[in-house]
Image (cartoon, rainbow, N blue to C red; front, side, top):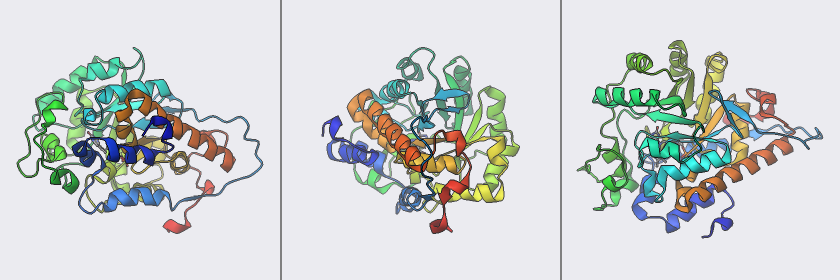
Amino acid sequence: PPLSMLLNCDDFEKAFAKSGPQKANAYISSASNDLLSLNANKSFWQKLWFRPRIMRNVSAINTKSKMFGCDVIMPVWICPMGVAKGAGEQGECALGAGAAASGIIHCVSTVSSYDLGDVLASAPRTYPFFFQLYVDKQRQKTEALLKRLETLDQIKALFVTVDLAVVSKREADERIKTQENTASYLHGEKNKIDKKGAGLARTNGSFIDWALSWEDLAWVRKHSSLPIVVKGIQSAADAKMAMQMGCQGIVVSNHGGRALDSAPATILVLLEIRRDCPEVFDRMEVHVDGGIRRGSDILKAVCLGAKGVGVGRPFQCSVMYDREGVEAVAEILQDELETAMRLCGVTHLDQVRGDMSWLNTSELE
Ligand code: FNR
């Protein structure tokens, strides 16, 4: 379908399912086992209602925000997602260029199809990016990567992904046996076809260190001067640990339902942190991802206290339309966010951040 026909995030996923390569679609759309966390992420945003206020003069509003010191047009980052070249020839370069043109931030995955230098070059010279780190079993490789990041001043935060000690079972991905080698998508030399299922995910992820522990985060700290953001927090207890270790941020995430199946919907974790350890929101930037598909979801996340949200699959699917597709998704979210704010009676996001009085959570209690 032509780009102009796509009206919302779901449309991009549907368009990709229809017209994208079958194997890439299985990799992108799939999640673990029975898809319980995948579906819960999304449906739980739909169980949270607003408490709108009326007649508040919403003629002048703005969605501008700051994430880890970076000015953005709205508090959205494009999730780190592996091997974007599977979705479209320009891969991560489309995500980088599209993010920059839209005023949001691309968090570049460790397992990118393009070299990091090429991804950064897709945006204007000083445009900010975040970088997502998987710690390698071969620790010297991670050390070299961290050293390289120190020389790249466009990178403004280090998201360390901790929710995928082992790549989970993604049956849709494993069912499609193909000779198509991930080498054609993946930059670097980490990939050997996984014998079990030829799943792209398991093939790409076998280097991730399952021995990772909190002490290793201290090791990362020693080798990097970037703000450290722990991606994959799924409990208040671990949010507190990250805070006590002096991290600059967390991402409440279950990897878009691609890690532990039956991991709680990310909203539930945000609510748990608010209840059990509310100081986390004052001491660190709290971000969230998983199932965010509407501008209204972004507004809900902000009311729950989030400083920013990650959006994954819709952006990966938009790469089929090159950077114009990426810009289109950002524009849709921006427009929906503005409309939701106006109809709620909200003129700027700081006015509502962490203020639960804007929300009705009765369906979640
Ligand atoms: C991911 N995700 C992910 N996370 C990460 O830290 N490093 C990675 O390389 C990847 N790769 C990846 C590939 C694909 C195709 C998907 C869909 C996801 C997880 C991602 O960053 C994010 O947590 C979820 O995608 C958010 O959920 P939604 O927005 O896709 O529902």
